[in-house]
Amino acid sequence: MSASLVQYIVVRGDLLTALKWPTGAVIAQACHACTAVMHLFRDDDNVLKYTADLDNMHKVILEAKSEEDVKNLSEKLTEHSVDHKLWIEQPENFATCLAVKPYPKEEVQKYFKKFKLYK
Image (cartoon, rainbow, N blue to C red; front, side):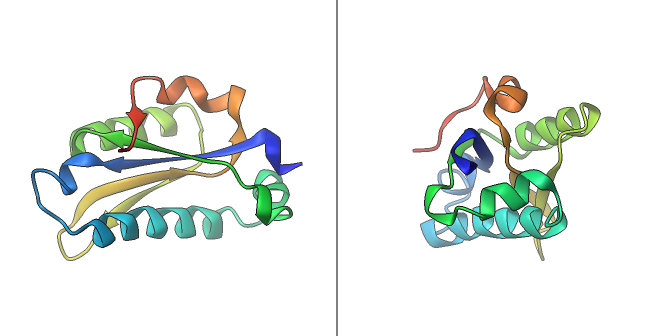
């Protein structure tokens, strides 16, 4: 059942390049956002279906070029009632990553077309 659901995660690429964060710290941002969104929407039907088949979860990790890009995406998702979590790292107090709860790909893919796979 979970094979038809996808979770999009958008991570700021400039954390690694311009800000020189360690790779592990950048990966932690994605983990924080994913954990938070799954907890916030833990009773949602899509989340329940997605986690019912843990060995077949599908995630797409994309790159935002800047904090502005990830914040703009969050605003657009909010405007269109797409459930997500914008992760604000502390003590820096800036947005580092965004994770969307699992959705059928065809429902949310359009919001992520401008982002490339994270490399």
